[in-house]
Length: 217
Image (cartoon, rainbow, N blue to C red; front, side):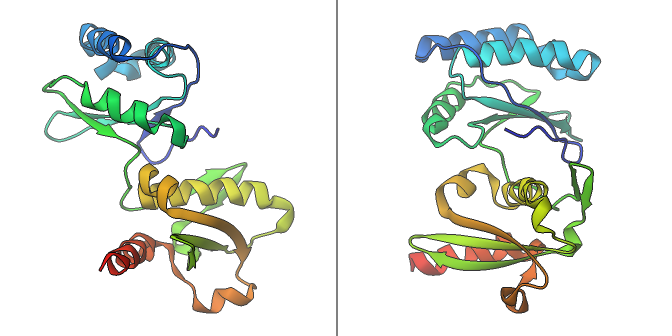
């Protein structure tokens, strides 16, 4: 599991605890309401707040993760309930989201959403700019597969480029589509034979949506 700061979005990923059911969901939201001010201003003591929140969320499901967004102009802050890319935790996301109370300062979101625009990413000491990344999209059964083409890609750094590539795809498509509609994923350099028909990664979401819209007709 990768931890990364993407733009101004702050991500916390944790896997501890073991409790399930509606009672645990109700208890989580009760705790959330009682600690709303601490959570809303988490920057004042981020590590402690994240640890406390992780402990409570893990009582609902050990695979659940969370993200905080910045305070928006309307005074609200996003709280994202995520499965951390683990399909078996999707029902827990749905259930906890559906049990969420109405709190005026919060916007609750299920699954990591798409991010627009995509952010330049740095991982393992390597900075990759969005403008330098291209993609190819291919049919893969009832899903689609992707090849991402990186400027300066080297096979001995495939793990670094792979981590960056997964983060970019997750930002472009959001967690739900990434986990339910994407098949194979490969990473190549611009010297690849397939690069000739590639397009800028900024167009990926639009191409992806158009493919599935046409498929549904």
